[in-house]
Length: 292
Image (cartoon, one colour):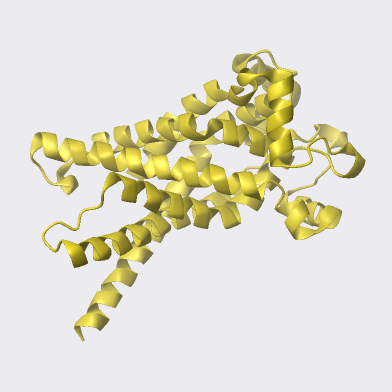
């Protein structure tokens, strides 16, 4: 009976993690989408001189609603993604706690390498759905404006991407670099957040659940900055691959070729294009995600 109660408690916690993650994901999209389209345009084109120039031209040429191009896909999907991130992280964390308790019952607390691995597990799990969701979003954000647009919406985009080279090579293009990015990004994200929360609790001699909501949001925001600084070059490569053409119009043969061409043509700077709006976006978005 005790085992049944324990399993039920674990299921309840997992469901709470999933629901909280979904709510945080919706907040993430609504707060961050205008910054994200500027970031993707800077990563994938050379027509803008800066983030401000990009935002100004988008507003002038495409109107204010352009900043929310492709929002429906992440609004539906990112809730699921963040839900999986939090659910996956806490599942892995509990597995480590059980393992630690077997060897040290008095202190089953995770090491920081285990926090990183728990976050990396969450990121890899999440990449199964985040890869195609972000691919569709990027296609919608970078397509021509007006009558020349290529896709009428997310469903049309999924259909056309899958028709080119099948689901794996079409819809899941860039999945390898997505997995690497997600593992690194969410390993660092959760590690940074847990470190700051634990340090605050220790410094003030309080329990973690006594830390104020303002501090939780602040630590979440700082963790978001750490996420992007640790994984941004991988994100640039992912965006380039997922906005690339098909067939004879394809510029990059794969992830390694994209890295090589970016280095040859743009140097180190090419791996950091668009980092400005990304870091501006990261603080409120990540703070809002943890707070919500």
